[in-house]
Length: 167
Image 1 (cartoon, one colour):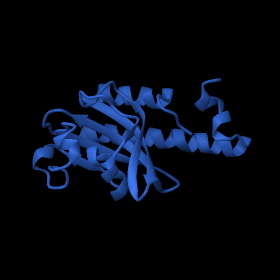
Image 2: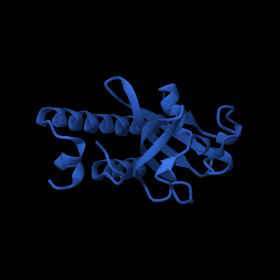
Image 3: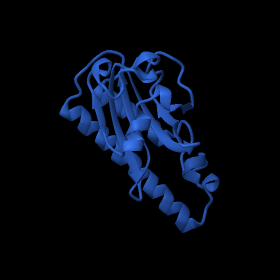
Image 4: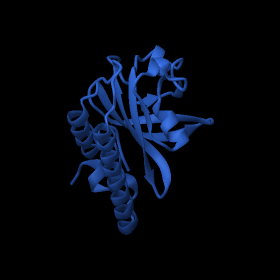
């Protein structure tokens, strides 16, 4: 349904970035592997944490996996003092100092999410959180539309003109 660099998700990532001005934004799909939640990056705004961004993010270096596993938003203004993440690789290795994450659902199930990260402590305002919710809902609408179109047309994902760039 989505490939890395998906044009619609990339546009949404940059729109969200322009709205809330974090260090970076990442849209991701969740995958289970051996009982661990891996995050597959689908779209991002450059290098959100001043380090090369891998296509597959392991739980040790993310906060997004908690968004998926808990199925809820996570808003952290100062990761260095937050008991949920202060000792994690996301903070200690990746340098995420503030985090805003919103899950994305399809058919009621969490399929991925959006992470906005900042390299310095910052307060996420109500409008920042609303903007992230808006972007997450847009991701869900795109996913719902693609799934419905694929089911209607009987296309395997690889043949969907919207996702393979042939349209």
